[in-house]
Length: 78
Ligand SMILES: [Zn+2]
Image (cartoon, rainbow, N blue to C red):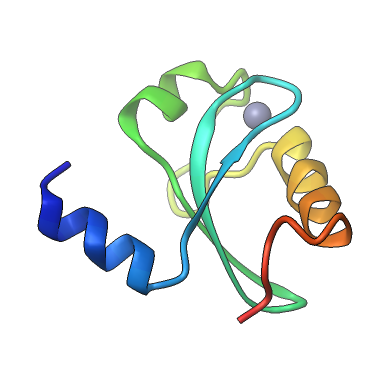
């Protein structure tokens, strides 16, 4: 990832989050309580045990991890 890209991620409010069930490191941005953007890196896609579908890759464990991070105040809803 280039420096510029990283800056954009930070400015876009993306936070690093590790899936508790598969330990994949993804970037998450919560734009509202019900809207979550997840940015999957190639490594995270390989790591996650869930088969990733076409449009929206999801992992049940990751979803729970995101909810937990929000509750714990580790992930800002912005
Ligand atoms: Zn996962």
